[in-house]
Structure formats: C-alpha cells, structure tokens
Image 1: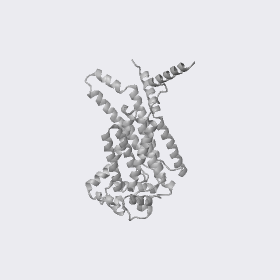
Image 2: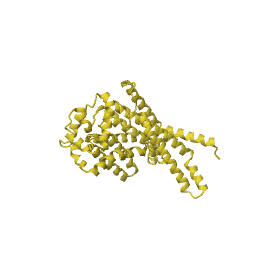
Image 3: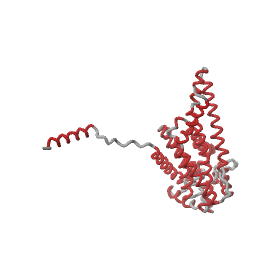
Image 4: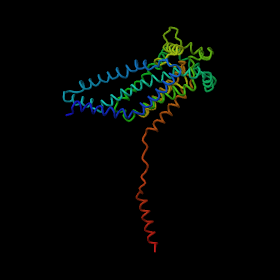
Length: 378
C-alpha cells in the first residue's frame, strides 16, 4: 500500500516532469516579460504595469473559479455516477493518481505564467504610442483599405448592419463576450486535460507567439488607432463620422462606444490596465480566432469549417463596429496561419531517415557482382 509520503513524492515527481515538458513556454514568457519590463522602465521607471489587474481578474478565473468547478465535477462523478463504496474508492484513486495531480499542479503553474504573459502584453501595448510617437499609419491604412475595396471605406458600406438593433446587439455581444469566451476558456481545459498532453506545448507557444507577433511586433511597427479613433489621431473627423454616429447609441448603453471611451481615456492618462492599449493593425481579435480555427480543424474538419466561418464573422464585426480597417483582419489571418504552421513544423517529430542497410534486392545484386568478379579473376 502506498504511504502518504510515497504518494506525495510521486506526485511531486510527476509535477516536475509535467513542468519540464512546458519549459519552452515558461522560458518564452520569462524572456518576453524581462524585455517588456526593460522597455517600461526605460520609458518611465515609475510607470506601473498591467500585471496586478490581470492577476486580480484572470487569476480569479483560472486559479480559483475553474479549479473549483473541476473539484465539484469530480465530486459529482465520484458520488453520483458510482453505486458502491468500492467503486467510488477506485474512481477516486484514479482521479487522484500522482500523474493526474502532477498534471493539474503543472497546469496551474502554466496558467499563472499565461497571466504574467498577458500582463506583459498589455503593458507593452500601452507603451507603443510612446515608442512610435503616436499613431503614424492611420491615413496609410485607411487609404490602402479603400484602394482594396473599390475606393470605398468598408465600414461605411457595412454601416447598414447597424440599422438592425437585434443584429447590432448580437454583433456587439459576439465581439466582446463570445470572442473572449472562445479565446480564453479553452486554455484552461488544454492546460489540464490528459487528452491535450501531446498538443499542450504547441498550443501554448502558438497562442503566445500569435499575440506577440500580431499584437506587439507588427502592431508597433505599423501602429494605427483604427476608424474609431481616426479623427482623434489624424484631425480628420469627417471620414468616419457616419460610422461612429451609427456605433454611438442614443440610449447611451452601447458597450462598444463605452469600451472605446475607456481605451481612449486610459491612453490619455498613460495607464496600463485590463485590456488597455490601442492598436488596429493587425487585428488581434481576428488573429486569435484564426489560430483557434486551425486547431479546431485538427480535431475535426467540420469544427474547422465552423471556426473559419467565425473568423469571417469577426472580420466583418471588427469593421462595422469601427475597431479595425478590413486589411487589419486580412493580414492577421495570414500571420496567424504562418505562426501556426511554423510552430507545428518546429515541434512535430520528423520521420526517421531510411536505413542505410542494403535491402534484399540490393544485397542480391551485390552478391551477383562479387560472384561475377570472382569468376573472371585468374
């Protein structure tokens, strides 16, 4: 019978093994965070970061609420789905085996690292206007957008959608609530599920690198604020006035208008908080949706098709709600696909090279040559 000390030792060993398999992700987060903090300190040593806000909100979700739900579900499985005490003990022993406990504890550390990552991401995002001297590319992106769409701004074409209150409410809810659920809830289950063991490292690295490449690197190099803030950053308040008027709800309860005001006020104050930072190109909403669709396609072709349809919905929503130029979504799709393919190629084991040992036919041919050579020798 396994003693308590032996059980704890085995659980600790399994935890260490699980953590070691995720070391590339942890290392990536550590290096990325050090770089972000260095930028933050160089620009303003007294400037606060977004990490406390993310631990307050994401920490409550990933490290408290969802684990509590997991424990409750485990209790239901043990008590309700079994008929006798012997079966319950067996089920409980399986559910609390050292490898399961080790995976779960490692998952909590991985999720804590993810929270650190998101705090670093938002912190750097709020620094980008200081690094770039404002938002220099809005006019360029708006002109490129119009050029690709027969001389018209796509948002002004899609503005008719806003005339349907029910459709508008659905778009707003989808873009804020449903997208957040689809983007952030699967992380917990991929971190904790045994079925995701072979997928976990690749998923987390792809997830993090998608955010960095799209939301930090490209966003900073080609920084733009988007149609919602076009008038503020360029002085041309007429170009997207009709779109902004459609977005602004006369009843004052538009979640989009409220969040856009929240972002702009935090930008003016120079504060880093939950979800702050303004950048349009490329679209992080579209990029994350595309990444999820690609992983869904690995699960099933039908799920992948549904994911790609959702990507198209997010692209349209981002434009008609004034968050993005259409090209922001187009570029994000390509970049997310490149990141996904690159990480998959890097982490997928390559097939072994063919053996150098001669096959049966080659061996027979060699024997025939040696026999002929011996016969011709004096």
